[in-house]
Length: 428
Image 1 (tube, rainbow, N blue to C red):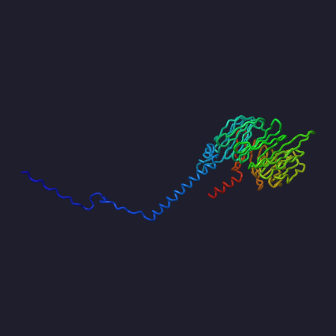
Image 2: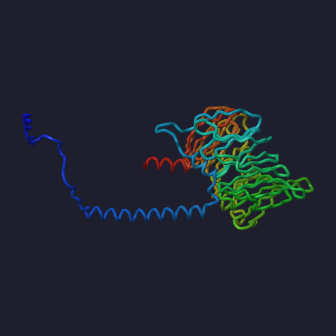
Image 3: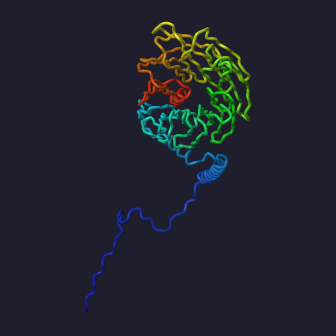
């Protein structure tokens, strides 16, 4: 008989043993809080409304501005995005480029443009080449607007229009291009000749379509568009049967159709001209004539003095006059283009070799120095250096002196754009 196995002792539950936190049975379901449920419904409602509005806005903008949605504009948007680190110096110091026999310079947007006989290049503030377009020109000339950059061969046949991304349009004239001009709005003009007329003026809109064509049987001196492209000033001359020169000043309204506002004839040759939305100013040997849209409204005589150098913006016109003394001081006069008045009459020690005007600032240069005059306040800045080939001022007020193989930043002028940027930076 087999003995019975001993019984195992029963397990006794001891407090604290086993898996802590283990819950047995079904979990109890809780109802959501009525307050947060209401907030959830409201946020869901407004999310649908905002998504619908954004969709309508995107479709509407795509339909209205379909012509502006291009690969070039998208690339321009990406290119103009700033990737500078905080504290990084983004100002130009010295821009270096390859020298050529014939060159021209301009400021376009935030880039420095250089045109040579082989093409056009844009440099950014780090000195990198942002655009390099190959063009063949004998006498390259640049004219920059807010929208486009125009490069043309003066007395040649070719021209091209660029932005900071690529070459947008190029053309060739049948006759040599005497002069050209680009407005801030994007419209531009070309002046050449035709088989029957001494002057043939072609005006194009910002889509590169010809909108105006004028033929004038006179020799062209200058043709300019105002910033908005709605007013055109054309200055020309003829030679009479007796061998005398006759000057002509024509002002046109291009807003709806080609409308001649006035034409003036003079027994002297126009030397320099500037145009703005509601008038113009033209320099003659005997004085300056200021015009509104109805004709001449002011004449300021030079009182027998002979102007030598002249420069202008749409705000200020500056002239230097010949000096009788060898190496003595020259007389400089500043005029308000809009008001037709004399701003200041001052002397300059040395012989002026160049005058350039940027807004209200006038640069006077000789072989050893440049004097920058603020015509609003009368203050001066002095820069020691050789006579440059050209002055270039960027939209933010950076002033360059351009030489054969480099351009140097010498000043920061208080332009309207610069003052707006400074004010926004202080507010931030």
